[in-house]
Length: 270
Image (tube, rainbow, N blue to C red; front, side, top):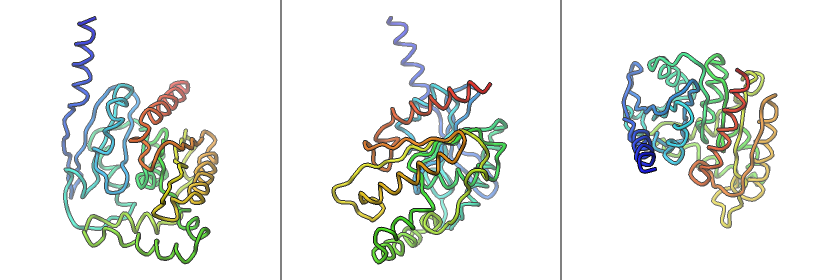
């Protein structure tokens, strides 16, 4: 038993201490990390303003199941720091160049959070041969603005105006502008028939800071996420009341369990 415990400690320590490296994608360097092994590869696409460390709560667990790649987009983490605005299409091209630079030839599973969902959807539509499945955590929706306007038009106009300019003055990038202006995004069948899972929060807040987070906003977003996922022949949605926006932080076991179910589906296709 002591030997088993020691081996497990060494194994988990190896996964946890996987080295963060950088790879050149032309004009920029991207920081990335790879851990795990196996034929399935999952690419983690973080939310707005978040580096690869945002995936810490589930990274090791996923690494025990598959090969996991996480990275920081330009301007974030240890990737090239600069003041420039990037449209979603550029982020998609950066991701594609990253996979090519890492010699990833087989299709990947895209696991994304929030704004990362926009990048994943666009990537899956642009490079359908490179994606075998998607798991989206509380993804940004092109219906966010319509939902806000439906609840309170006057307040929505104020909130949208603020969100569109947030962070631009600091030179981070125009992720907020892209997030709140990009309409529409690819759906099925622009994204091919692949397994698509959405995990979204419908948790109620006592003092919601914005219309989208009010009880009505959560309700309407939950309905939209469910309808969007189920338009895919292999799509489904899980709505949780136990998480905030960062579902992989609040309910890491839920995310890992749903990812395991997705793997079972993919393995049955072989």
